[in-house]
Image (cartoon, rainbow, N blue to C red; front, top):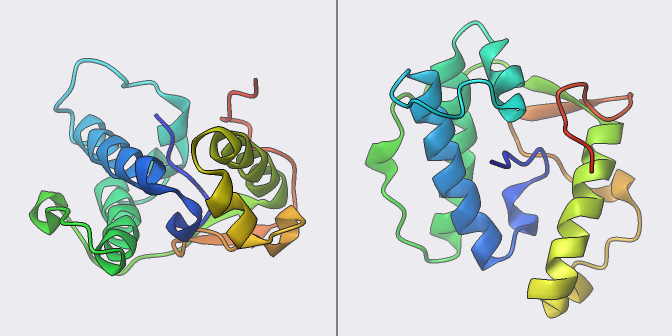
Length: 145
């Protein structure tokens, strides 16, 4: 499961579809509708919110908006709760880690997309709109490979 902190605009087609599916899975986990993934580290920051279902709903909403802008037909009705809420902090180190991770994926899957982005340094990366950036290392919950 990968719930990206970077803006969905950076994801290639496979990445965006996977993000949608994995975010829907995260929503099911937070609703208690699964047997697995209950302790997945990517869910920590959502669980820490006052309303985790609202938080993952906002996350999904922005993935949906990006998909719709690309002409994809994601089912908005699968999002359980979409209400305005607080932004979640994300560290500069986390964004840098995820940008490196995505670059490696794009080099293999969609090198042209990577070239078109023309992003030289991670500090130029825009976060997913539900996050606000703070200084810091990779998040404690991240499993670094």
